Image: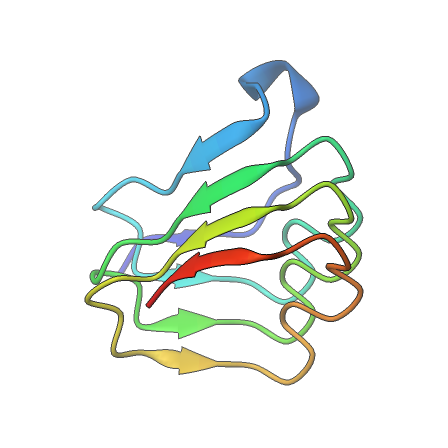
Length: 87
């Protein structure tokens, strides 16, 4: 099982595609990453932790197609600009 525990580095750009080798995203992993605008989470991710993307106010696009895992409480809270989702 490979997970993401660290913090988002803005040098990665504004669009983040979680690699297929990742199977879980830790609590608070991307919290307050205000420069993140687009996110793709593959079906290999079985769990998104509590507050994982909380406060990502720049996030406008989320792709969770084929996602069948669990989403923790408040995982996307305060993502005020999130308006395009593909579930």
